[in-house]
Structures are given as structure tokens and as C-alpha cells.
Image 1 (cartoon, rainbow, N blue to C red):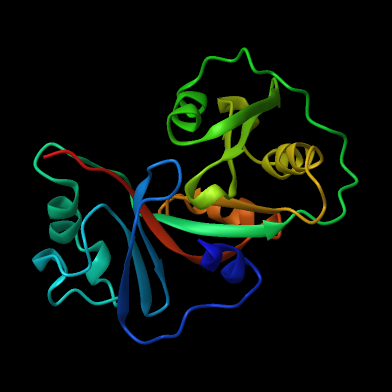
Image 2: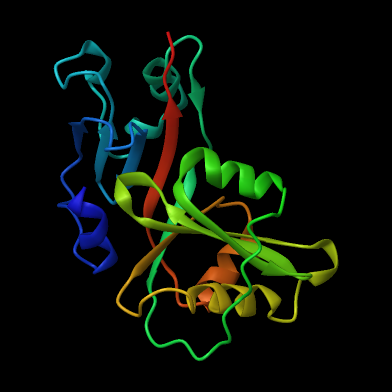
Length: 203
């Protein structure tokens, strides 16, 4: 899905209200990805399916009724997340230690939705890095209760990014209502490019 890397480089699809229907990615992931006025639906359904009749890219592709029908009667619909991205660039921070033996819901979620996952952290929190939707590099972070504030999140993010090449793009999915996380990623030079919902269809 080259559109992901293009958007990361500030080259976006046209604002034309169009919904493009595409197959699931190479790992079989189904999703709806929204940019300004242009959406992509990754699904096994064909573009001529009646499901897509009248669905536009101005919020129609993430309408709850559409997502529920797309997932099927027993399917799973994930949360609507803000997608943010950053080119790694020059990192001066010390590498955050690897701690792959950590058992945590954040790690379990990363292992479910990504592959080649590595876990980094210390007593302040953990950061996961892995390959997710459309083969892109993804990051998530979880702080311990006592670690919030004071720039801890930024330090952990920079320490995890120190493991990557400077030319890599790194994506993060953030709940829009989690203002603290959005502000933290903005402070780490991530920029918003769109939104997405992951789906696990099942009839």
C-alpha cells in the first residue's frame, strides 16, 4: 500500500470523496484507512458489492453501521484511531533496553496485530515496535502509573527509535480522546495523517 509511505512524505490522495476497495494486506489484515476526502477499504469483498453503494469518503467509510456490516455478524471492529507518523531522523538518545519477556496487554495487542515485534522499556514504561498494516513500522507506548508527566513518554519514544535506521518512517495509532498521548506524540515530532479502523470479519 504505497499510499502509506506517500502520506508519510506529505503526498496525499486527491480530496474527491472516493472510497477505493482493495484486497487485505499481505498479512491478511482488513481495515478502513481514511485520509482527507479519500478512503481505502481493505477487504475480501469486491468493489461491486452492494455494501459500498452510497458510501463516501467524508465519514461514510467509518460510519458504525457500515463497519458493522463490513465485519459481519460475528466480526470484530476495532477502535477508530488517529494515525500519526514520523521519519526517525537523527537520534541522540540512549537506546532503550530490550525486554521481550514482559507480559502486558499492550504487548499482547502488538503481537496480535503485528509481526517482528520487539519490546523495549524500563521501570517507567514499555514501547513496542513491529511491522503492522501494509508492512509499515508501528510503535505503541504504555507508561507505568507513577511515570506520567515530566517528559517520560518522550524519553521512552526517543530511546526506542534509537534502535531504527534514520530513514525509517514510524507510525503510531492513537485514540483521539487520549489527549495526553496525542500531545506526547506531537512533542516527539509525529504528525497526524489520517485515521483507521482494523477489522476482523466473520459471518
